[in-house]
Image (cartoon, rainbow, N blue to C red; front, side, top):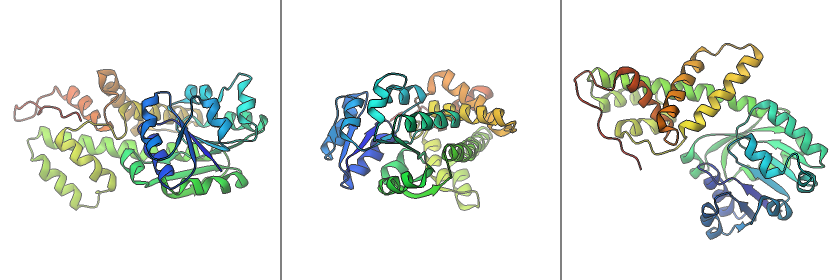
Length: 304
C-alpha cells in the first residue's frame, strides 16, 4: 500500500521522514517544493500536485495548517473532490475545529472515501524522535488500517470514539499544555524580575514535583532566550482560539485559557508569531516594562 503525506511543515516533515525511514512506500507533496528534498533523499516519491498524491496513494495523511489548506488540497467544493476521494482513505492529522472535521467526514464518505482523525500531541522534537502521542477517531474498520501507519511517528495512540472525538480530546489536552507552559514562563519572569538566579530557579523547579518533560524542554530555551521554533506562537494562538470557540459553544468556562489567549495574541501582534511559544515571555516583559528589578535590561535574544 502506497501512502501519501501532504504538509511538510515544522511537524509534518519529521513525521513523514519517520514513515519513509520505516520503509513505508511514500509519496509526498508540499506547497514549498524545497521542503520535499529530505523526503526524496529518504526514498519518498515527490508528487507535482495534491491530485497526483491521491492518484498514487491509497491512504493520504494530511498535516496541514488550517481548514482552508485542507479544503484546497482535497479540492473540496469542486468536481475534483469526488475524483480524489473515491476509494481513498483520508487521515486528518492537523488541528481544526471539531465541527469542521465532522462535516468533512460526511463529505468524504459521501464521495466514496473513508475518513479518520489522528491529531497528535507533541512538538518538533518529539516529532523528530517518533515520540508523538496520537488520538484516533473514526470507524473501527478504518482505524484498523490507520494504526500501523502511526507506529513510526508515535509512541502511543488512543482511540477516542467516533469523529470528532479525537479533535475534542486534542483541544482538551492543549488546554493543559498552553496553561502549563504559560505558567512556567510567568514563574520564570517573576524570578527574573526579583533578581533571582534564573538558572538556580530552574534547577529548583527541575528537582521538585512540578518538573515534566515539557518544563525540561522549555527551561533551557527560556534561560538562553532561545526562541527558535518547536511550537510556533502563531499555532498556539490558533489552538487557543479553537478551544475558546468550542468552550463558548458548549457553555464551558475557561478562565485560565482566556488569560493565555490574550498573552499569545499580544505575542503574535508584537511580531513574534514565528517564534517558539516561549516567546510569550515577550508579552509579559512588555506588560512589566521590560526592565528587571535590579535595573538590568534583558540580555540579547538568541534566534537560531
